[in-house]
Image 1 (cartoon, rainbow, N blue to C red):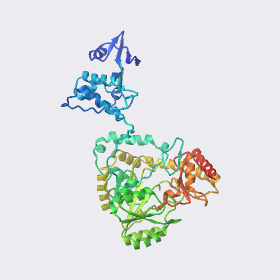
Image 2: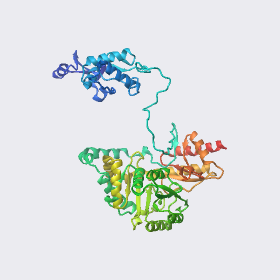
Image 3: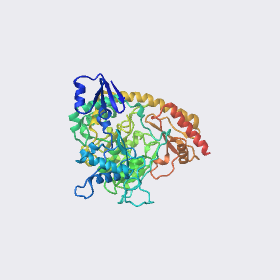
Image 4: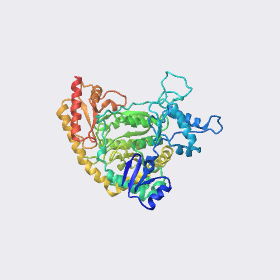
Length: 536
């Protein structure tokens, strides 16, 4: 057992050769049967060497004394903000060995810094940056111009659309989209799988380089797509990505040259449109209604435009949740075959089906080789676990593989190996079964609370699946102003304008229900009601 005593670690009962070795090394003193070890040596290396590493560069040909070079370098480090007040500095011997100079030279530099007010030194505790170091370097004139945070930029950027992401305040209930609850993450199972992938298969996983994704995960995904989606997938026809957004970006790069047209749903995901636009596409909107994308309008567009691709969410339209009707599915595939454009289908959250029968993705019925199927595993566990995939024809996958290698080289082989194990062992399936029950209860709680508090202002159908609901808002209600007032009351939801291709107002809103328990969802409905009444 050890006891802290004035900067020493006290170890009782130290006798014989053990204390002798400590004393000979100069690490300890032995007093009255008690072994005292300096605390800085008793702590783990990462604690004992917790001082910040300053960037000190010496010019051997300079006429300036070495100790002043060190002092001025540290002054610049503090002035530029790399070293902050209170940060510990390396010891004399440590910095001297790093620079190849004597500890006395470092000591002289620290004395200079202390004299100038940049550093404070305490016997037995070392040196640290002063609480209030000087505002300017020696010889630097006073300036009223504020120093910018971070480096100044001396070059121009390409013109780009930037969308500011609002920062969440403490207590904010963010129901803007359907996200899995990170508190329900099966951390123990994931940690065990990750550890086995990292430790037991270290050489295989850490030395593996494959931009297409870990072979075991592609094998597991092929099995999953076959069993749960009805897609006759092969591991060679699958590319693993860091989330579905990367998958869509890569697909856009593979399909589109500058100025070529891609048809998209007129109510949809702005991030998808941005990914295609970054690839040089002209995104052309196609209206949606209660049966999904209006394929008749798409057919008219295909007669006047050379389409390279059409992007759809056929299983559950984003954001309105309506499925693409059987007739329109067949007509869409026929149009793609006739006009030789690709169908990019995004399978976002089909794992979560609470009622009704599952629908097959378009890729399961594709006989013409026109469908590219994009999916994600992030909706199962957490958006921060970035894993997506693309299924498509072999030539497309080969091109995506090359693009991925140029962009990101490869993914996280250890994480991919761990997910493969979770898929194969059934852990993900068992987790989904638990989440089905939990998310169904939360869906019902939110729907009931909205009906009770806002039944005269919102109309919606209880979603049969997914992690969010779409509601029509009564005429006369300004949805955008309502969303702004609700944000002030601590609720963030997405007004319909957020999904409008032309940015026009939409009398609808989207609410996620999966990432909060029932009590919080009732509070969401109450705050929404209060903010609406306040506006009146």
